[in-house]
Length: 453
Image 1: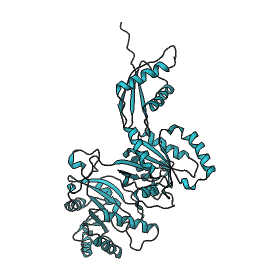
Image 2 (image 1 turned 90 degrees about the horizontal axis):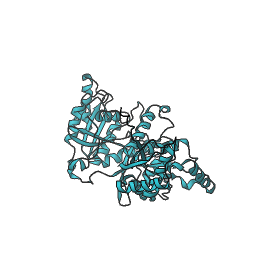
Image 3 (image 1 turned 60 degrees about the vertical axis):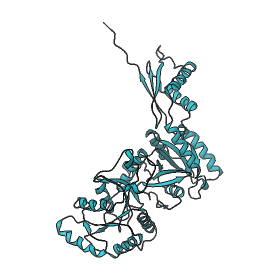
């Protein structure tokens, strides 16, 4: 059981994957089963009901069949407050899935809540595979047989914890998956956009606003989003895959339990993305945490857009102070497009589309070797490297090693000052743009040849 990775290859890979929603009442082991199917610890697992709050997507594969596995929060018919929002997410997952994997606890037997879930499934009219979980040995297999009374066909006894019976369950699951050729999508898939930022800056509200639906659970409680959430969103005429991530803690080792793993996966979300929208709370002072997240995106080499959210909560005085903070602290990231937004009211959210597009264009920019060396020649003639210790290193040749992000390699006659390398980077931006993307310049001094005897 492995997770599928890497770019799309071939016509089959360009086709969309069928979607399997994993549903059930709280704490029956849905996330543990998801991890078992993926063959790794991806979903957050804790012995507390309600740890999974949003619906979360993972790419999975079994016997050559690729599919998307959607983990959901526990469904409860009498849920109130946040629990009701979580239940709503589970119902949405059912409505958008091709197949539903219903997980029940075989050690407890059929409950009223299980029957309530079954009623929702019957209304959805989707193929259902029934997993009777927590069958850890042969003695408990008889209890799984009692699940026939749910009227969903054969209950597949499985131990998500130990893997017992998981192969038979997956065989039954892939047997009812629809053919991938039934739906078509653009080869390569939509561009990936990660929404990142510290907790409670409005990342989930922004995703909901752009998706025009309550896609993520939103609450004033800091850290509501635990798992990354993927959503296809149309911005103008372009479809993007948005990833809403858990708010980053100050330091990963300060977080505990499921927050620790969520923080690690937020970093992974940055790596998965092509462009990151860094959300900063405009109503609060820009913090070290905000700056650390900006640095993380730059170090990962991803395109970046900075969204100053909650603009509607700022008065004239706060905006004046914010401009000073940006000038003082965010100066190193002036290359990233800036949009002042209100996710709650929708103010300027539509401008994010053009900012994301510009950042991706800059990220993919390639400069020909001829143009680059002509630029370097003019630059060195007008601003030669300072003489150090009686020596003046020269640029012999330059080339763009790759784009995404633009990375340049300079072959030189000797070591160059970091200040001069940063100067070259600034001038590259002035001449070639590179809006919304980090630019990396690597220097490779010529090796000194040993004297011949």
